[in-house]
Amino acid sequence: MKPYAIVEWNDTKSEAKGWLCVYNLVEHYSGGGVRMHPSVTKEEVIRLAKMMAYKYNAAGADDCGGMKAGIVYDSKAPDAYEVLKRFIQAIRPYVDLGLGIGADLGTKGPDFYKIFEELGMRVPATKTHCEDPVCIKGREQIPILVDAMIDGFTLNDAMTGYGVAFAADEAWRIRHREAGGARVVIQGFGCVGASCAAKMKQLGYTVIGIADAQNLAVCEDGLDVAELIAHKNQYGEMDPAYFPENYAVRPNTEWLDVDCDILIPAALEDVINAGNVDLLGDKLLVEGANIPVSAEADDILRKRNVDMVPDFIANVGAIRFFSRCRRCQIEFTAEGAIRDIEQGVRDNVRMLFAEKDETGRYIRDIAFERFEPTIQTDFEFTSNR
Ligand SMILES: NC(=O)c1ccc[n+]([C@@H]2O[C@H](COP(=O)([O-])OP(=O)(O)OC[C@H]3O[C@@H](n4cnc5c(N)ncnc54)[C@H](O)[C@@H]3O)[C@@H](O)[C@H]2O)c1
Image (cartoon, rainbow, N blue to C red; front, side, top):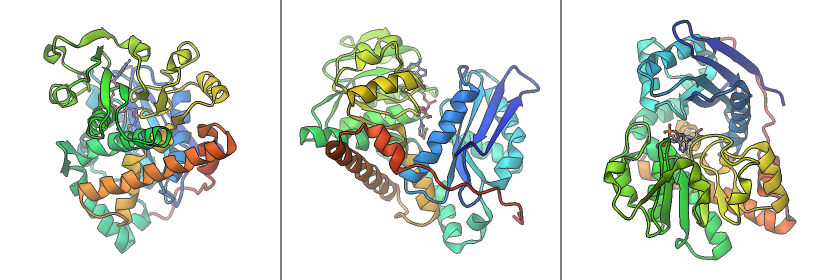
């Protein structure tokens, strides 16, 4: 399958540029995040959009295709919100036709709702979403539930990170026949990394290393995840002022050097590449970030047939929630949403490891084959919304 549409954008008021890639549409609809980071490239956006198409299949969201957008800009710049707003304005015709856009690396969910309101846009939906009584009921619950609290997080901030932690826990249990006990290092402490760290701790694991855009904090006895979360800033950066004396503070580039059992990249793409893949050793790799492993590094991991959970299996939490809530397939509570994500993620991990053990094939290859997107529809032209 080829990408359905690729749109390039140049900002009129800053140096920002960006791309939208709609990889496929299913029932005239496609969903994915908009990221903002200085290193975004067109190729990356296309790779991410393709991966989203696989992810919707893996999430059991068979009414949605995959898309992604990326803006080359510093998300901490004072005008980042205005840049995002102009980008959304530029891709608005597509959004109005049926693109479910939301937050990703460097952007925040509530900003999207604010921008939709400021631009007089409705929350993205197709004709079916607006007319089917089941979808109407489900969609009413989405804004209520994303703000519902669970363990001190909004469901919005918990659902993907928790799903990643369930994936890690399931894979670890399969290999070690017990939960917990292992040492975990996480790269990224934003929406995904922070809630993943908290859930790993809750599940009995010891989070010994966390890297953010500034630092790597390491503590063999386990980092105080709750304390780090309480003092992280809005960009997902830990505050070193709250590091106790027994924390080692190292350059964030050293995150792969820390000896651990489970490695969870939850920040940028291609962070495991040909230059550092050997440092992975026999750690269990669970991909919280999208495409954190470069193609070259993945060839090496395939040859070594390492145990791993691919991104589109581990980090499906948010899209599983949005799709299944919209179709009233979950209990309408934060706990009900998390239970549903847990079941979906654990089932997929068990299936993939079982097939690996039976066939000897590399897990990512099995997952790509199993969840290959096959449906491509057009935008819905007879819009009467
Ligand atoms: N937010 C979601 O619901 C969601 C869903 C699925 C996948 N993802 C993927 O997860 C990843 C993280 O997304 P997010 O929403 O948590 O982003 P975020 O912007 O909330 O957080 C990003 C984190 O990465 C850290 N970071 C940035 N550069 C770094 C570097 N060089 N070294 C170490 N850490 C660095 C930041 O400090 C921050 O802690 C992305 O790949 C994203 O596509 C996010």
